[in-house]
Image (tube, rainbow, N blue to C red; front, side):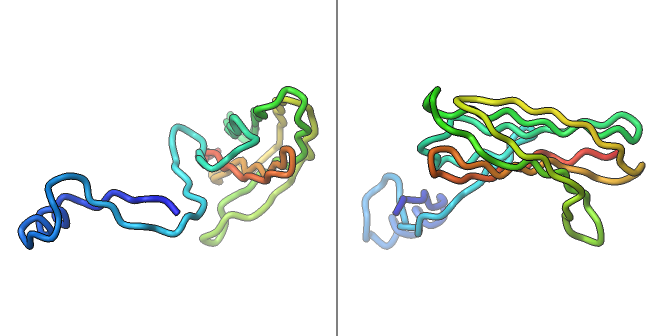
Length: 143
């Protein structure tokens, strides 16, 4: 389990009631995968075998270029996974095509695809390193 900081309003109420002293107030929250979106990739902080998964995507006209960089904590770790190109259609992300990934220690992969103009695309990566599986998604890109 992990502790989650509760807002100032709850702290003020608790202090007014006299049940606790002044300081940080925490609640216990069930541990689960928490993802944070930041600068074109998602960070999942519970990885023990993975240093980084950095998916990205770019477009020029209808040329789509999905990319990924993956780095394991061990230089001898086996990396196996799939990079997916997805498009936004009818309110959800759907798979367009995919490419297999395989390497040791770290790998970088870049592909190209001829897409449709005025369509949103993203790169999604699912990877397993030394038995630990993780998923990361890029920011969307529009053609």
